[in-house]
Image 1 (tube, rainbow, N blue to C red):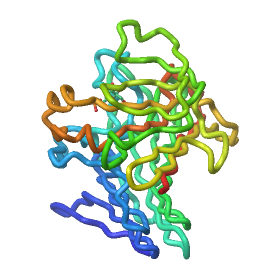
Image 2 (image 1 turned 90 degrees about the vertical axis):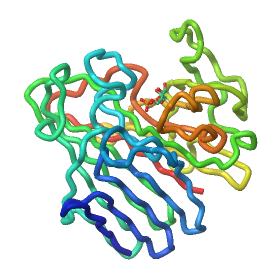
Image 3 (image 1 turned 45 degrees about the horizontal axis):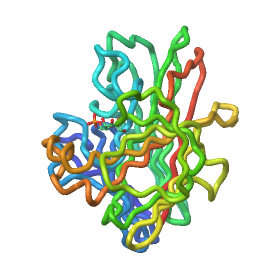
Length: 299
Ligand code: TA6
């Protein structure tokens, strides 16, 4: 069980978690972006574009980029998906966890490191990445209001899953859920998912509302050609009470994939984004308040 630091010019650029099971996870301090998770069976669960910028010039394409304080661009002056994913986070080795069963690190960001004049609030983000005793990946984003006034925010873990072959992929666990279809002419229409198994044959961009994983072992199952990836996501107040959270499902498909310079032209055939978040609306966090957004990936 170990945490390796890969440095560049004396600064930590990548953290590598090595679990005794053989599972490995890599996180860039830039954006606190998980870029790799290979489980104990040697299966890579995370997709990363081969043309992703990894030099800090833009958010990493693939992995688990972190979206905060906005999802999309409701605040027009601020970059799409906010500023958490395109700034370098801090890392304090003292916060490492290397117990008998788990290995984990915590990265942090606050208003002294990244902010925006259109959202001028004191905050602290902490992002914990653990490989757990059963070889799953648990990523927890903590949002803290360290200021004297309430602020509104959205947050999301923009997880790019490696599904191998999208034509052999289907998602279970969304049936009867309500969703907004961002590919439609009217994105405000509330639709209902009627399929037990959702498959993918075209550009897909949907916000499923209030699809929190009710408890351990539930959540969303992504059936791929060589197994199933279990995705659990939930949001919690500091007192542990659950907040109904959302799940975004995205595949840009061929034309949009080709239109992104950092997205492999054929990448849409190998990836699927299943993204737990609080994005259907802004959420109000009072002074001293904390919300955690927890994702668990296993296969
Ligand atoms: O999560 C889905 C989404 O909001 C899509 O609408 C698409 O914009 C995607 O995020 C990627 O956004 P990005 O800014 O990373 O290119």
